[in-house]
Length: 437
Image 1 (cartoon, one colour):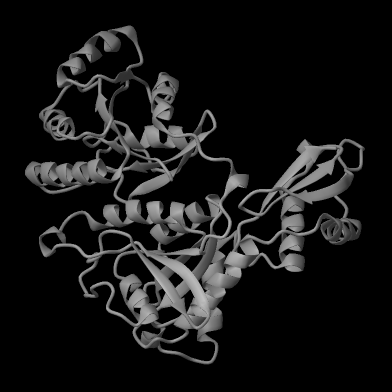
Image 2: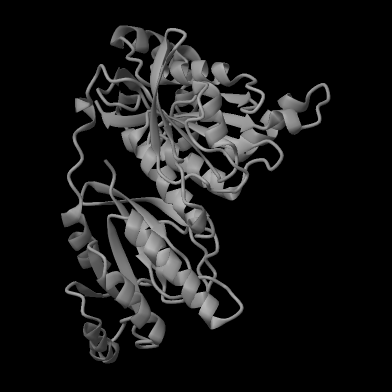
């Protein structure tokens, strides 16, 4: 199971800066204007060999302060309910505010571990001033400067103590049923797809975005096919519909993704693929999950001769570099191609668990390397002598060669494309490792 950490705090305390620091990349937009983070940001962080999901809850831009407080309190409640641990960020530069107080009150009622993190502590004077935050009443207090990274190591050490060590990839139980997660934005038709497949009104379908709340596991056994469907959906009470849905759906999608073998990413044909979808897509690829793209509500799109071909081409341009994924145009409502979608998911599942005999692998790959040699480095030709598949869940291959560090990305891409072409890894992320022979 995966571990999820949410970063909460009033606007402009540096949540996104810390988020970028944890992910070691510039993913969130950082600016001095409060409330820049509108879209949810989420990603995977690694520390001391442990991996965890990080969610940046973002500040809100709203007309008046009370709307502000209400919206932020909502997000905090969702984060508290859904995440395994909370980083509560405050700002030493501004000092304690009433918003910090009210947020602390919400967090104190929770049983989840809270790490009170005082940001912008970049000199001794600030460190002294930052001690006022002890009065918020949390045991774990960390002084950091997210912009420079000072103090973040101690915070990560404390967090990683809570994270259970992941079981080695090799030791995954076999004989389990394939698990498929239906993921995507609110209102793309996830519940309708589930109902169409099972033929039962298993989840309530309505036009209110986000009527679904918990992930539901459905055991599917029809037409000689058997698997578990995880719908990142569930029934929710009407009173809660105004809650911050997108945030909810994101945390749920990430959790379902961690459980699944193959992710069925549902897109709305009329809306196309959004930044949020691309975010979810790249997260699934990084987690090594099989991926099938389902363009739903295709019955509502006006069609000409090459509509689907052109649509798929545009879609794949946005997905680059990982474009070797199946795209199906479906309609959950009309039940068009929904069973084909399940067949494709099963094919992707079997590709993901494919083990290629070493002799066959070497026969094919050494020939591919003969046809296109690795570039010469510092006057030395790079020689790859041997290839083997590693015993991991995600298809991973080790190439043994004389200068493993000198192999550049274009050549790695060539080798990956050859593997895909010869052994059919459509929809499956493939990992390549280069080692000294």
